[in-house]
Amino acid sequence: MSPPARNPRRIEGESGQISVLVLGMVLIVLMLTAVIFGATRVNLEARKLFSTADGAATAAAASIEPGYSIQAPAEAQLQAAVEDHLAVTGAHQNHYRLHVVRTWASDDGETVHVELAAEAELPVLRWIMPAGVPVVADSHARVTINR
Image (cartoon, rainbow, N blue to C red):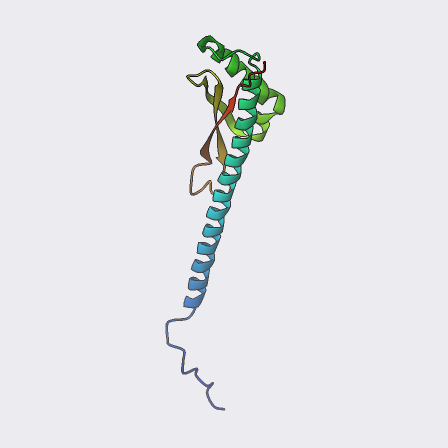
Protein backbone atom coordinates (compact mmCIF):
# COMPACT_ATOMS: atom_id res chain seq x y z
CA MET A 1 0.00 0.00 0.00
CA SER A 2 1.30 3.47 -0.85
CA PRO A 3 1.49 6.30 1.72
CA PRO A 4 -1.29 8.93 1.58
CA ALA A 5 -0.67 11.75 -0.84
CA ARG A 6 0.53 14.94 0.80
CA ASN A 7 -1.07 18.26 -0.02
CA PRO A 8 1.69 20.34 -1.61
CA ARG A 9 0.06 23.61 -0.48
CA ARG A 10 -0.07 22.71 3.19
CA ILE A 11 2.82 23.99 5.25
CA GLU A 12 3.78 22.16 8.42
CA GLY A 13 2.73 23.91 11.68
CA GLU A 14 0.00 26.15 10.24
CA SER A 15 -2.93 23.94 11.06
CA GLY A 16 -5.95 25.89 12.42
CA GLN A 17 -4.69 29.42 11.83
CA ILE A 18 -7.60 30.24 9.54
CA SER A 19 -9.95 29.45 12.43
CA VAL A 20 -8.24 32.08 14.59
CA LEU A 21 -8.51 34.64 11.79
CA VAL A 22 -12.21 33.89 11.24
CA LEU A 23 -12.88 34.08 14.98
CA GLY A 24 -11.12 37.46 15.15
CA MET A 25 -13.14 38.80 12.22
CA VAL A 26 -16.40 37.59 13.79
CA LEU A 27 -15.53 39.38 17.04
CA ILE A 28 -14.76 42.61 15.17
CA VAL A 29 -18.08 42.41 13.28
CA LEU A 30 -19.97 41.79 16.53
CA MET A 31 -18.28 44.75 18.22
CA LEU A 32 -19.06 47.04 15.27
CA THR A 33 -22.67 45.87 15.34
CA ALA A 34 -22.88 46.64 19.06
CA VAL A 35 -21.40 50.13 18.55
CA ILE A 36 -23.87 50.86 15.72
CA PHE A 37 -26.72 49.60 17.91
CA GLY A 38 -25.57 51.88 20.76
CA ALA A 39 -25.26 54.94 18.51
CA THR A 40 -28.74 54.32 17.14
CA ARG A 41 -30.10 53.97 20.67
CA VAL A 42 -28.54 57.30 21.73
CA ASN A 43 -29.94 59.03 18.62
CA LEU A 44 -33.45 57.70 19.26
CA GLU A 45 -33.30 58.73 22.93
CA ALA A 46 -32.17 62.23 21.92
CA ARG A 47 -35.11 62.55 19.52
CA LYS A 48 -37.60 61.32 22.12
CA LEU A 49 -36.15 63.68 24.72
CA PHE A 50 -36.36 66.62 22.32
CA SER A 51 -40.02 65.82 21.71
CA THR A 52 -40.63 65.68 25.46
CA ALA A 53 -38.84 69.01 25.93
CA ASP A 54 -40.99 70.54 23.19
CA GLY A 55 -44.15 69.45 24.97
CA ALA A 56 -42.87 70.67 28.34
CA ALA A 57 -41.93 74.10 26.92
CA THR A 58 -45.33 74.43 25.30
CA ALA A 59 -47.06 73.45 28.56
CA ALA A 60 -44.98 75.99 30.49
CA ALA A 61 -45.79 78.74 27.98
CA ALA A 62 -49.48 77.84 28.12
CA SER A 63 -49.43 78.12 31.91
CA ILE A 64 -48.83 81.88 31.70
CA GLU A 65 -51.97 83.97 31.67
CA PRO A 66 -52.65 85.49 28.23
CA GLY A 67 -51.57 89.09 27.95
CA TYR A 68 -48.86 88.84 30.61
CA SER A 69 -45.16 88.49 30.10
CA ILE A 70 -43.08 86.22 32.29
CA GLN A 71 -41.54 87.94 35.28
CA ALA A 72 -38.62 86.56 37.30
CA PRO A 73 -40.76 85.27 40.20
CA ALA A 74 -42.90 83.36 37.69
CA GLU A 75 -40.00 81.05 36.82
CA ALA A 76 -41.02 78.83 39.75
CA GLN A 77 -44.43 78.63 38.08
CA LEU A 78 -42.73 77.56 34.84
CA GLN A 79 -40.77 74.86 36.66
CA ALA A 80 -43.98 73.56 38.26
CA ALA A 81 -45.76 73.54 34.89
CA VAL A 82 -42.91 71.53 33.36
CA GLU A 83 -42.92 69.03 36.23
CA ASP A 84 -46.71 68.68 35.97
CA HIS A 85 -46.47 68.07 32.23
CA LEU A 86 -43.81 65.39 32.73
CA ALA A 87 -45.92 63.68 35.39
CA VAL A 88 -49.14 63.76 33.33
CA THR A 89 -47.49 62.43 30.17
CA GLY A 90 -45.58 59.70 32.00
CA ALA A 91 -42.27 60.98 30.70
CA HIS A 92 -40.34 59.54 33.65
CA GLN A 93 -41.36 56.04 32.53
CA ASN A 94 -40.27 56.75 28.94
CA HIS A 95 -36.83 58.16 29.79
CA TYR A 96 -34.15 56.70 32.05
CA ARG A 97 -33.08 59.15 34.80
CA LEU A 98 -35.08 62.06 33.36
CA HIS A 99 -34.74 65.37 35.15
CA VAL A 100 -35.26 69.06 34.45
CA VAL A 101 -31.90 70.79 34.18
CA ARG A 102 -33.37 74.28 34.15
CA THR A 103 -36.37 76.32 33.08
CA TRP A 104 -36.08 80.00 32.36
CA ALA A 105 -37.65 82.88 30.48
CA SER A 106 -35.96 85.08 27.92
CA ASP A 107 -35.09 88.67 28.75
CA ASP A 108 -38.13 90.00 26.89
CA GLY A 109 -40.37 87.71 28.96
CA GLU A 110 -42.09 86.14 25.98
CA THR A 111 -40.13 82.92 25.42
CA VAL A 112 -39.93 79.93 27.75
CA HIS A 113 -36.84 77.72 27.61
CA VAL A 114 -36.75 74.19 28.99
CA GLU A 115 -33.67 72.00 29.24
CA LEU A 116 -34.13 68.31 30.05
CA ALA A 117 -31.55 65.60 30.61
CA ALA A 118 -31.79 61.80 30.59
CA GLU A 119 -29.61 58.80 29.91
CA ALA A 120 -29.67 56.45 26.94
CA GLU A 121 -29.23 52.91 28.20
CA LEU A 122 -26.72 50.74 26.34
CA PRO A 123 -27.36 47.21 27.57
CA VAL A 124 -25.24 45.50 24.90
CA LEU A 125 -22.17 47.67 25.49
CA ARG A 126 -22.08 47.57 29.31
CA TRP A 127 -18.86 45.56 29.32
CA ILE A 128 -17.10 48.11 27.07
CA MET A 129 -18.69 51.47 27.94
CA PRO A 130 -20.68 52.95 30.81
CA ALA A 131 -24.23 51.66 31.16
CA GLY A 132 -25.75 54.98 30.09
CA VAL A 133 -24.87 57.94 27.90
CA PRO A 134 -26.13 61.38 28.99
CA VAL A 135 -28.52 63.05 26.56
CA VAL A 136 -29.64 66.69 26.87
CA ALA A 137 -32.44 68.44 24.96
CA ASP A 138 -33.29 72.14 24.96
CA SER A 139 -36.53 73.55 23.61
CA HIS A 140 -38.39 76.82 23.76
CA ALA A 141 -41.92 78.13 23.24
CA ARG A 142 -43.32 81.62 22.94
CA VAL A 143 -46.07 83.04 25.05
CA THR A 144 -48.96 84.08 22.85
CA ILE A 145 -50.59 87.42 23.53
CA ASN A 146 -54.27 87.68 22.64
CA ARG A 147 -56.08 90.99 22.61
